[in-house]
Length: 438
Image 1 (tube, rainbow, N blue to C red):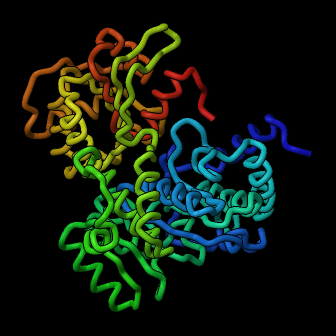
Image 2 (cartoon, rainbow, N blue to C red):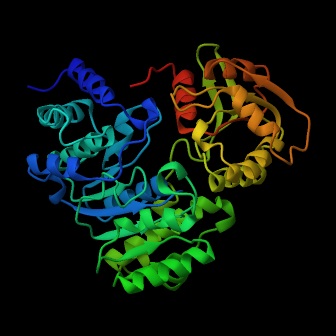
């Protein structure tokens, strides 16, 4: 019998009881993979039924994963993709040939995984992300995927996804993020993220800081890992591709180059197919990542916002990319709705955050629907105490994302930028679409 909608709701409720990092603000233990390894063994190793591409990095993982998954479909394969976080529906994280997993398929796999997990009675330890990863692996087997693209959740070496054999590893741009877990030095973060690599398994590396590139070159050479650096590889393989680089943001361009390079390493196709890949990749967009929309309706008020930009980027490089995107698209003097996690308010964030605020005509600070949320007061103090705030603008503190939208309605002809947290972006999208969180 197919699961009912109620059973889908039930497995979601049970999953939440395991306490996700997003909702509990408690970092999961990334020191061990014993729990998920044991769980996958009891599931008869669903992760061994398809070929895997594994992606780690700080910025660009989700878009790179989505691009590659779409290109695998273009190659004629059934392609699954596992990403995080989600904005409005947990099923965004598990896609099958570009479509969210159905409620029935999710509920079937989740019920099976949870029944085994319950039997452990806490030993070995399983995190929320362990369970969700196992559910994804089970879904991909049940739905007969041939290739699966996995995005790490946090780090790499001890991430729940790092329990599989793989055909290719990918490192997107590495920067400082989750320092409380991964370390305060760039090399420390890189050491965790490169933990997904394997001897003799090729790795493709997106453009990195010069100091990090040299470190990566030496590391992969010592460990006999075939390494392809995108800035060296892409132009030799895709010199006939006609793409106007200036039409896209720098982060998008990096994901585009990395995705096509990864595909060429795997399939080594002719120029005609490279052109088809390029055309297909240019159509790939990802909600909540430099996501520019026009005439966005809010049915509750039967009104439209003329222009809205949604971006959940929450680290220094992501905010810098957002600043560049706003300037390139002439969205200055915008209304900025800003909410952030308290653990993101580090010194390295100050400069790009001030640059972002200086592009706004009015700034609305709101909490996010998360235990990790910074209070609007603490976020205001963080901004005021940072150097470089160069203009006077309207400064509003509100109690919720919905109230922030209400205040923005007065200036609906001005571009509204929602930024600082994927959870804030997801919450705002739910409000605009009159949806409830799944």
